[in-house]
Length: 157
Image (cartoon, rainbow, N blue to C red; front, top):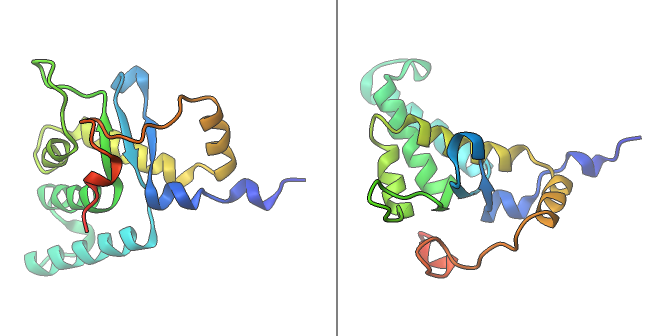
């Protein structure tokens, strides 16, 4: 018989985030410190979409793509993506999480945005037991972010 605990997501990962190596075949060494889809984030999505729809005089489900990209970028920045590592510019310089967030607002970075959403989706759908197993097979999580600062240095209050 299956146990109820097999269906429970990890509340710590949902709120505080966990490093996710999204898809090495598609995104190489990119790792994303992502939180999951919390009630707060989902409520913010609804509020941002309703506000944009009201401002534009359209149905919430018919927002122009550029407007939806802005909503999504805000959600990624404020609620989901806390840090990144393993991503560099064409000169080999590491991309900061702040730069990453700015890219989310711009057209042309859809694949990078897809990686971010995929990381958040994984946190939101992976159970606590699955995370425990995955962590047992992984390197110990870093207490520092990609630029060497302590993890708390990227949190916004």
